[in-house]
Image 1 (tube, rainbow, N blue to C red):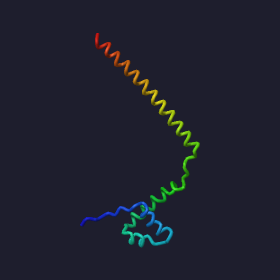
Image 2 (image 1 turned 90 degrees about the horizontal axis):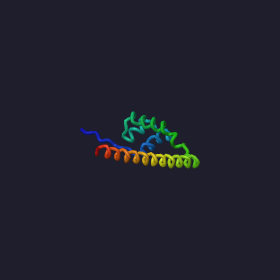
Image 3 (image 1 turned 60 degrees about the horizontal axis):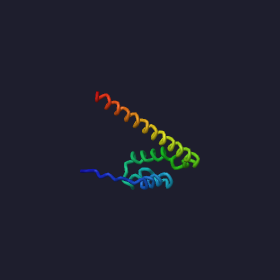
Image 4 (image 1 turned 90 degrees about the vertical axis):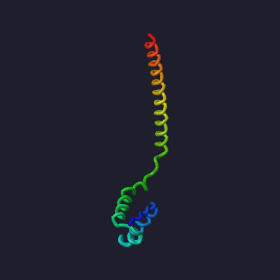
Length: 103
């Protein structure tokens, strides 16, 4: 007999964890109601707490965003210049090969 897996959405996972954490529903009852293995429940709980600080992180200040944007523009300009120099060198290389190949 084939086991059918239920893919829970992140919202469903949080709702199941919330039942246990806030409403004090025992893990066994929450898992039974949701049709989960307790091991999976504890894996979700571990992931939830490991990634919980992301909810409290602030966006980078505007000054930092501006500095990052300036850095990106400078790096793009440097990359363009490198490409130009490289194309000039390749043109010279091809010209020399043609010149030496004709002798």
